[in-house]
Length: 395
Image (cartoon, rainbow, N blue to C red; front, side):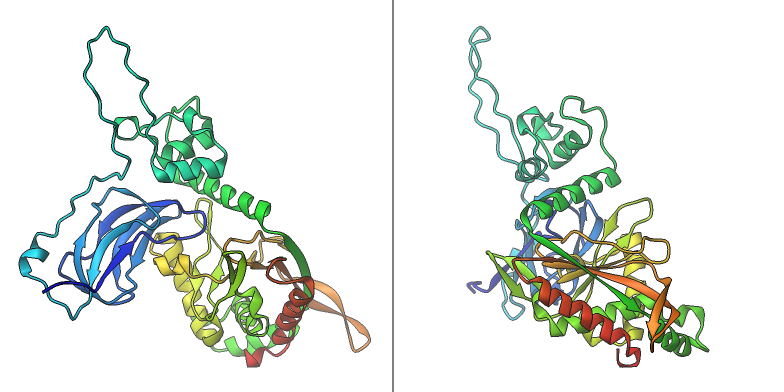
């Protein structure tokens, strides 16, 4: 029968700083039935190897990309047909990858001429991902030495040039160096293009700590709630009141997100930073958030994150913890329009009932996009976070 209900599975954009990813392996095979959320492939990015999910139900018709290929974001990698449709078995059995491992432009035809004739200059071959990376890092692509097939310039070549200089391509930079370069490029672009404004609020955590101690009494160490989970829940609930901070800036406008997916900044062993999402944080109990957070940290540091966890965050929260500074003013991660920061908890003099008493205090900060909100609304948001933390039993 004629198949007309087809869907392309494309290389997802796992963050604003991603131009391409390397297909490491397929987790499925042609003819397999897949459901939304199934892991279909492993993709390597500068953040590590990510488990990529499929976002439609159906049957894998065929793969278009072979493992090992560097694939630009948005490129079709597989074809999935509606599960209800049928095609001849021969079609599925013959569905094997047909394209080259590295999708680069085809070389220009070469005409054989006598050796004494003057040959035209050879055009530099550059992959689309490398060209976009060079533009982002401000590198003259013509100065970059290519190490790809037939001398093609790859994204790794551009990253190397940015880290060590285009004239001396002596060694491949390691993943941490690449991650630093990509983070730097994304944050530089954010500071150039997004009109940030900054606010801070000192919050008394005495009620939260008293409640937390009572809640944790009798629990094992692995079951105890940490103060950071209360902060996350307070942020998630405050976003219900100030939804313009839970949005994405696209097509010159702020588009509010229906769900609240908190991107949690996690420091990686050996250096680097990643901010995968805790999905539907406002709808989860504190115990559920604690379990999700522990699982997310473990998988972020061991290389087991899913693509939706990197592409779904609607706002980012960074918590410096007990070994950090007292305040952090983050840089917005586009296309998000805000980032919330918490410093370490410190003991400070606090006025209660007309008397000065010692209190555990945390500094909450907001860096927000002035195109999507203003200082007044940002202040209302921080005040909401403060109010919610004064009644921890309601979180």
